[in-house]
Image 1 (cartoon, helix red, strand yellow):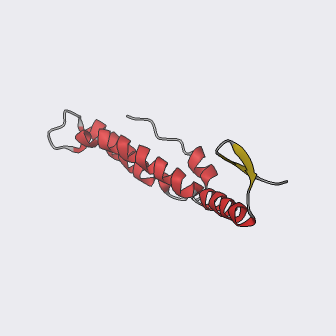
Image 2 (cartoon, rainbow, N blue to C red; image 1 turned 180 degrees about the vertical axis):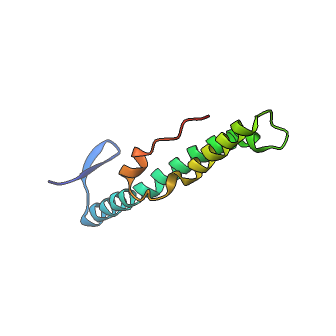
Image 3 (cartoon, one colour; image 1 turned 90 degrees about the vertical axis):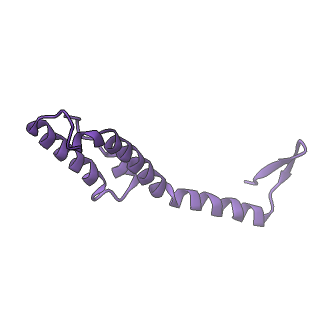
Length: 99
């Protein structure tokens, strides 16, 4: 089946070179799926970590027990990408509950 493009409203068949270029672009996009997914996961994780930075300050109003819970929570967040090496695993990540 031939592939086409529109040029000034006219449908024109793609050349073999244009088809090869489109296929190369599609392959490159597919190959980058994991990198995009893990970057998104890390961005979300880093945002959550940043929002809980205050819990680690020496003058935070948390009790020792609460501070320990947040320390463990934050470590769980940092460890969330361990062993995650496919898009499916990225999509299956469950974030820990905030203390």
